[in-house]
Image 1 (tube, rainbow, N blue to C red):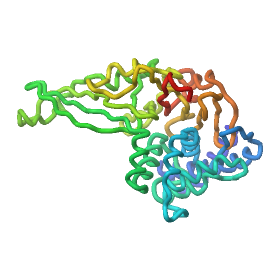
Image 2: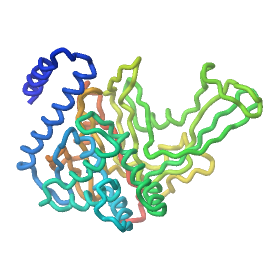
Image 3: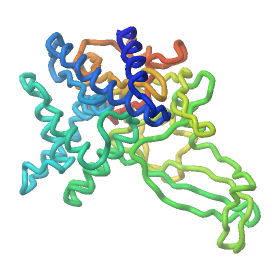
Length: 366
């Protein structure tokens, strides 16, 4: 398959004629790659295997990113429960993201449906993203959740926000008068920078919440001193949601060039409140003594920053096994396979990009 791709790319480059600008070259290659993966997915679909709670999704015009996210949404029963509480007057609105998302998640449970996500893709293509282009999974994750909130009644939208919302407080401390400037904010995913060496999820979290001294070029305006002053900046954790999405920031921009960091990042299948010790505020509502987070979905990126592919590991039910979804192909998997996405072994190999954890209690069986 790699040889086919290389030969076709060379052929496309020859057809560019006089227009050989980088933008034109990338645009044409991306467009062809979308057509190529769609055709390959159509061929693979007839050979894919159906499993309980999991079904493959055809790749339409580089839709692998959305396909992988849909697999994670499908494994988030709490999200579908919220969407089912909403009964819009127009049940066929083609531009309504939460409606099409709900229809897709319901249709994914019907193995006989050939393309349960086609209407959802078209819905996003009409108003949010361009087809046949490389997408960033964290960005699309936010687009879907933000559009869902805007296009639903406030009460239901708040339930979706509460399902994923990470509440934090930014504190900037004036180095001269020690006045603390506080600003509350919220996130749908926890953005963790990774170092160009081996990392652990805990070390990345500690780095995110670590106090930092702002450089002189970024002095903060202190209201009390009435002028810009040297200061320190830190983020404190206020509360954690039922579904925690962790974004491992593997793409780094240097002088306009984006590259991928494939460095190793180890993460646990389950963890308790200890991992957030460094970032807790005094009255933080995080994890109780009997609560913990359990991993149930991993969005995986394969390739480079310019030419990549997304797949997903999901565990639809915590009492069942892991599954691996690569567009239309689905197969049973294991925790050992998930661990292979830590990174570090191959420069452009399979690397975990988004981690989704579900809050659970040791006093409950579910």
